[in-house]
Length: 192
Ligand SMILES: Cc1cc2nc3c(=O)[nH]c(=O)nc-3n(C[C@H](O)[C@H](O)[C@H](O)COP(=O)(O)O)c2cc1C
Image (cartoon, rainbow, N blue to C red; front, side):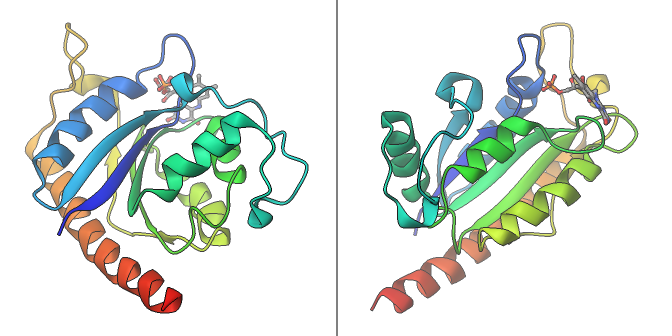
């Protein structure tokens, strides 16, 4: 069984490093036998600040960008957010992307790849768990946290991970698969 995994790049600033980290994780995820993987770059998706008149739970979307985002997220079974840490938290772009929708996120698992200085982005991940659980998602505890992450980026802007990082990425993907299976069954049974 293959599950649809969407990897979301959270940073959008011009000189961002997020895509370098995300490309490394993407390659590992693509080797996983149980996931079909798609990379979603919030810079390309370019959502404006949330501009829908109704609560997202009602799904009465009025804007083309919301309808497109809804379709993209609805088709997923699992997510991984690739997040930097901005001022001990996560970037506003991620909150905005979450706030646009409700039902589409609900009862699906979320994993995290975080990067930063000494914290490895762990404070960003902790703060993300608030809105993620409010949306009815399962933020899984296994994560990839990368401290002093620039040490892993070579002169060609390629991320060269060490063994512990590779291991944590694979462990997270395996757990994410378990949650994908369980929650997909749960969504199916509730619908029956
Ligand atoms: C607005 C801003 C706030 C930051 N705050 C933190 C922080 O709280 N903790 C941390 O470890 N790094 C922080 N940094 C440094 C980031 O880890 C580093 O710039 C990283 O490259 C940001 O990810 P990005 O390049 O994908 O945007 C901050 C960077 C920016 C631009």
